[in-house]
Image (cartoon, rainbow, N blue to C red; front, side, top):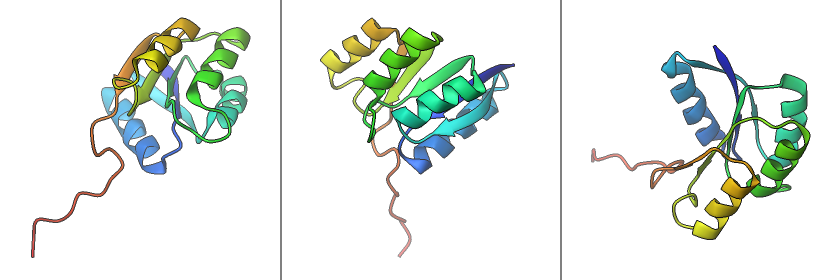
Length: 118
């Protein structure tokens, strides 16, 4: 089973991605990171086979983290971001830096859906 590091500044999105990955039966989550700097530390410590990476994060954004990871310890990186499908320049840059794929977060990801009951 291949190991995955999930990187996203949203705790809810980290949980959602962890659940999706665990349910796949093909991968196991070995850790999570809340920003690019945290991701760099954990890539070195955990040596995951694959990294999922948000682009918009504090301290060190996804593009910066992808650049560092690919120059220091290259491995497949899948960008999972709300901006993956909207910001073509940023998406192209992520691929140029070494990301293998881009997945757009669904609209409303991380937002609470109001109850229909009254």
